[in-house]
Amino acid sequence: MDLDLDDYVDPYEEAEAEAAAAEDGSDDPDEDDSDAESDYEEESFGLLKSGKHRVRNPDGTFRCPFCPGKKKQGYKIKDLLQHADGIGVSSKHRRHGRERANHRAFARFVRTEPSFAEDLVGITGIQGAIKPTPANRDGSTNGDGKAKANVDTAGSSSVAAKVGLPREVERFSWPWACVLAAGAGFNTEDYDSPSVVGRFLRKHTVLKTIDEVSKTELEKSGEMVAILASKIEEKNRHLQDLETKKNATELSISRLEEDNRKLHEAYNEEMRNLHRRARENALRIFQENENLRIDLESKKRELNLRAKELDKISTENANDRKTLDNEKQKAKYDNSELELASIEQQRADADVLKLLADQEREKEDVLARMLQLEKELHEKQQLELEVERLNGTLQVMKHLEGDDDGGDIHEKMEKLSERFEREKKRLEELSGDLVRKERESNDELQEARKELIKGLEEELNGRTAIGVKRMGELDEKPFQNACKTKYGKDEYEIKAAELVTSWQDELKKPSWHPFKMVEVNGENKEILDDDDTKLKFLWIEYGDDVCNAVKTALMEINEYNPSGRYVVPELWNFRKGRKATVKEVLKYLFSQMDTTTKRRRG
Image 1: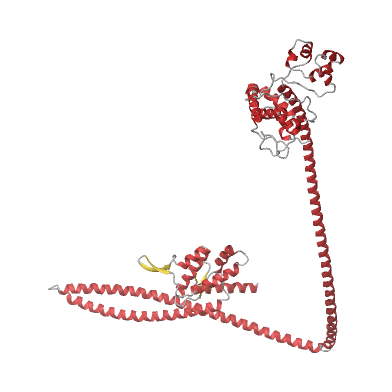
Image 2: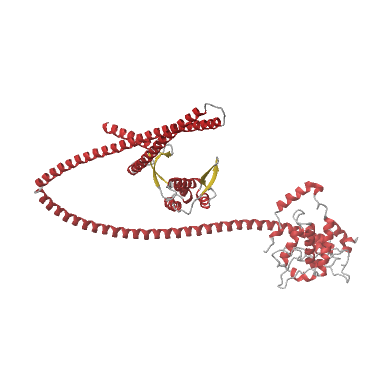
């Protein structure tokens, strides 16, 4: 049977909801709404009678005019009645009052409309089908709307004659008599008549209108439909559970089949790989065995040749031993010569150091003599001032008349002038000698520094306190740190080397001179220009450390070799961060020699 389950609820849930609504009392806005529902029912019935709603479909099925949004729009007449009855008798909390009234009117219309009479014939399960009362021309029915019931029961024709009813009633038991009385074609006049039939009908039957009978039948059929709907819903839930389990089982089976297929494919692929590796291993082992066999044969031949050579060498052992002894003696002699050469080299180094010490001592003597000359020059200046003062006094005395001491003063001034000239000439000669000797000593000292740099450039480096520093050469460490941060650990060394090379070439260009003149304490001083475009770009790209390294190299080149702009080696005190004196270098070398001597003796 095709039922619309969307219109029904579980009767137990409906009963509980109705009980809860009853406990709420007057709070339910739909309570005691039966009068309004009756008005809605009559209004909808009138619209159905007027033909404004289409009920019959072209294919012979029927549709509910009050459920236009439902997916199902084709019912059989019996299913349509069950649909209308189910909604018409549903509870208030489940359906709106107007909706229930519309469906009750529709159920009554189907049962009373003559056009549905043929469709209702033969429908089982609907007892006491109500035959419509013929209507007058104005649409009203005969009588007071009372029903004439006709029960399709065997033997009903035997009570067609109303006069014989009591005799017929006496022949049947009371239940059957009631059935016969209910099935006979009695009307309101028979029920209200004072005759035996009227008394019998009033005593054993109840007079009901068509609406009351229809409502009673609808309630019974609605209860049955609700029960059946709940059972169908339960069956559908069970069916849905079975469908879910079936789908899950099918999904599991499909997954298992897919896993099985993948396992088979993996197994086949693994077997193919195993066979391939086995073939490769077999070929490799065969090739290795072949190579080993060839090597073994070659080694056998080599051993045979060596055996022959050993036999030959064994006969020459005496000569070889003699030759070896001669070579040992020669090596011993060579070692002694090397020791003598080393001693001579040490003596030469000591002489060089002594020469450097003498030059340093001579330089100190020259400095002492220069200080003495400065002192004498100061005395000379004092003497000149004294002469000037005396000349001024002489000029004053010349203008004084009657002064007898003027001649003595003039004589004193001439003597002082002669003395001053002699002293001045002597000091000039001494100063020239001192300047010449200082220049010679300075040249010798510079030559000594160059020789020290040349001889110690490879011996001393930045890891010692005193060493040789290449002035104007870039420090690579800041570049490496910056490139490691920017390019990562894989290629930072190459990038740093390229960057150092490019900026070292940039330092050699005479066209790039990022310096500016500023006045410091009344004197013009040349300083680096921080606003230079290249220095700004370097600072933005690689940071402060790299930029400071380039600035340091620029200042060193500008100080030591501004014209050539190439790297110049210089003795450097790395501990104090300044240029090292020859005295410091000699002192450091002597200390290193003492340490080396102590180690050899120890």
